[in-house]
Amino acid sequence: MKSLINANPRDLRQAVTLAEQARSNGRQAMIAGGGSDLLGMVKERIVSPDMLIHLKSIKGLDQVTQAHGAVQIGGLITLDTLSHHPLILRDYAVLAEAAGSVATPQIRNAGTLAGNVCQRPWCWYFRNGFPCFKAGGNTCFSFNGENQFHAIFGGGPSFIVHPSDTAPALVALDAKFRIVGPKGERTVPAGDFFVLPKQNAARENSLGDDEILASIELPAARAGMRSTYHKVLDREAWTHAVVSAAIVLDMDKDVCRSARVVLGGVAPIPWRVPDAERLLTGQRITPELAAKAAETAVAGAKPLAKNAYKVPLTREIVQRTVAGLAART
Image (cartoon, rainbow, N blue to C red):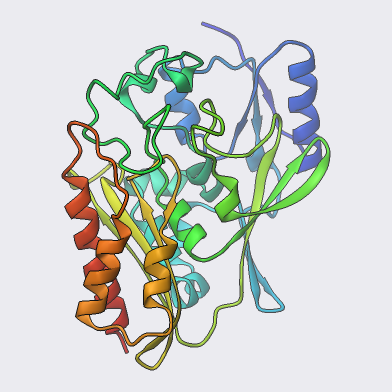
């Protein structure tokens, strides 16, 4: 069995330096937060690191703080803690619900927000050693193979779906991601963090070599903001969304001032549908309008041979979620 070097940096700068030094010496260093996805990838021989850099040794990366209205969430906060945090539950329900829907209680107690956002695809071809695009090859085996759970939007050349539950919620909340790397810090809007396969078939996000997702900033919650996360599974526990919807409505009584509709389980990135959002904005949301927005949300879907069922399923989820959220008082 391959031996590993375990590193426990004192801060993010040292973590980045350790990763950069390892790479310059021809060794593979992996960042470990909760380690749930990393452990799976090691077992499946997708990665074989020489060094594990444990972020748990760094203090303060698991906190929720508030300043000037905005909310800062450390990337190492566990999904369970996030799902029960009173501030997140009160003002950002979509994120609390998304975090609380992930996998099992055991995984939510270990898995972190940054880890959930940055996890690798769960396509069975990628996870079982096929030389696909995600593994550095030049074929997407799902296109003509088993594609029941693959993308109906944004696919090609790879047709994976992004596995994160919290990612659609963060895009819907217009969050910002603070990233630390060898060249310093940068901030990226959540909607720009994720990349389609046609941009980079080997990656799911814009993290560079040796960069770390350190924290996430949520904008100040407005009075009248309502949000929710709806997820459909193919079994009761420990699985990813077949289809999900993260929806945020800014309501003035029964009129929608603005809307954010982001889909999960249907595309290689959290899939925002601006046309449906525009349809809702400035309108009193009726069941008929919710149905129209849902129809708009699936316009342009391109299902594969075995996943056409996702189109009506997505339409129904959007319609019911928008209507139900608008009806709340």
